[in-house]
Amino acid sequence: MPIQLDFRTLSLTLMLFSIVFGLGMFAYAKENPKFSGIKTIGAGYLLIGGGCVLLGLRHLIHDFASVVISNVAIIMGVVLTYRGLFRFLDISLRFERWLSPTLLVLLASVLYFYTFYSPDLIPRIQAFSTTFAAACFIGAYGLSQHPDYRSRLVIKMLIGMFLLIGAFFVFRLIWTLHQVVPDDFMNAGLLSSLAVIAGEFLVILSSFATIWMASDELQVELSEIARVDPLTGVYNRRAFDEFCESEFSRALRSGSSFTIIMCDLDHFKKVNDQHGHHIGDEVLRRFAGILKNRVRQHDVVARFGGEEFVLLLPSNNADQGAQVAEDLRAKTAETQIAIPPKTDLAVSASFGVAQYCVGDRDWSAALHRADNALYAAKKQGRDRVVVVASA
Image (cartoon, rainbow, N blue to C red; front, side, top):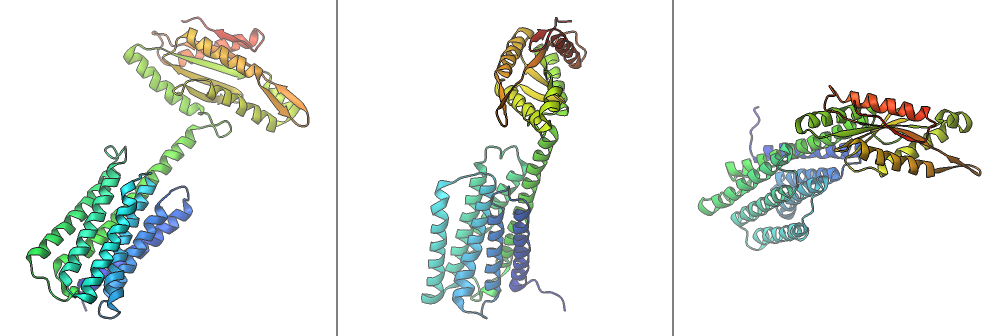
């Protein structure tokens, strides 16, 4: 027997979509607890599914459950869906906190009145359509407040979804003002069936968009992990190479300069041999912290290998780089690392400074000169800064 896509059948499919996607959201949130709002979205889907169950049982259960509770649950599900999206994207709307509950209370009141005191299907459809449209427009407006919505396709897609569904329910509202609606809601015509399909559209597209955004964040996080040294928290050599390539291209275009500083902890092997690698790791972390905290925000600090670090200073010449290196050298020399039970370990570092020159064929030429300067600092007795002459 062929399946008839009547209102009950469509309600059943929306219920299945909502439950499956809702449980899927809960499972995803459990596996990825760093994301906020996904559980809220899942709860919204489950409410939509629950409302559809009650709605599909019209004439089989009490009218209060199949009319009032079912419709309010569906709208509440939409509210939780966009609230979850707001939380995920860190969007806050003050007016929404009181407007959404107010809309739900008004909807429940209208549905109750026109079900038990003055039974009339048309005002119920109008009230539900108005509330659903309002909820969608609130969702679209809230998403439009995200600072990056113009540059992020997924957010624009969500805004378009809410606007399209909201426009449909406005059309449905206007249609009821000019057309005769059947007395039986279960046979209320094409628009009622399309309303269920709109709900399916909302559940499917919003869940897809949420996973899309979560995947983007995870990809950025993994990319950052691949560029960061896990011990010290500064960039690794791969990331440093990328920054230098970019800065070299900028220097070629604009004629600007940049400086590279190579630095190396003095007698680090003795620290590991005498105090153990755990103390050596602490020394590396402390030294990396000094480098990060005493340079500009757009300067690049990276661990080059072992106890050797390298810095990229955009828009700096050799003299400015030498001042930075001297400040770092002095701060390092002041550092005392406590070693249980009562020992303080003094550390020092040597620095080599080199500036990019117009004739350099690539940025590694400046790196090579900085490395030579570092070697000279080591040879001259360590704990000092050497600036190599420009080529």
